[in-house]
Image (tube, rainbow, N blue to C red):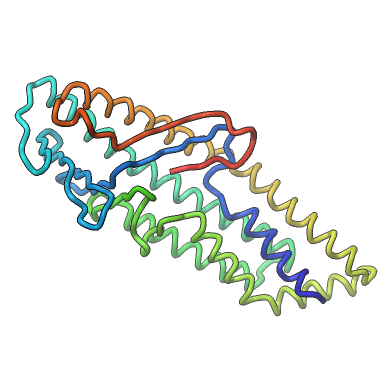
Amino acid sequence: MTYFNATLIASSLTAALASPLVYAHESCNVDLSAGFKINANSIEFLEDNKEKHSLYKITNGKELYVDNDKVALSDQQKSLVKQYDAKIRELVPQVKSVAIDGVDLAVEGVNLAFNGLLGEGNVVAADLTKELNLIREQVATNLTIDNGIYVGVDGLESEELLGKDFDQRIESVVEKAVLNSMGSILMAMGQQMIAGDGAEQSFETRMESFGETIEHEMESRAEKVEEKAQALCINIAKLDALEEKLKAGIKPLANTNVFTVTIGQDDDKHASSM
């Protein structure tokens, strides 16, 4: 058995599972020029540097501070600030839902893949499912406004929660489990070869087909997650539009621009997400 066969399985699985959040037909690119912290009482926007200087802050859903100075607001301006605060807070459970659905989709893919390769009740799928469920629990427990959330320009900045790249964390878990369980996998592969014609080239072809099958199955199961991800993108775009109204209606915010959202066709390629 060659090392090529071992790495082929790992690459086939991670290619199928690495991006469970979006198999979208539209790309959604969300660019942040500043980070922001959300808790029960405030939303604060911070410069993207070591000092994390406060650009502006909304407290109690209606009070605005720019450069730590309170801004006197008209009733109309207060209404804009209140809408903006509420819109950002509405996004948190949506992000949480998409993230949890993404983990659930990865769990489905893991069981589909390893049950097909090693049979029902195999240790590899059980161990991987356990690791992925730990990630799910972390998301469900920690991604809440009550616990406080910090979003940097590269995404959620909490290694204990999602890390800077949620997809890469899931991919890393899959790769680690595959490598740690390679003995069991190679044994199963050997048994399949013995049961077949023993031709390694034929087996490698089956492994390539196996990877393609898993990817197809994952895509077909990802539609609901895709719909949620696209709905989330649309809501972030609405937030971007509301930010423009905020800038136009409140002079001290005229030169700020935290959110920039672009949506376009992606030609059936994997799309980018928040």
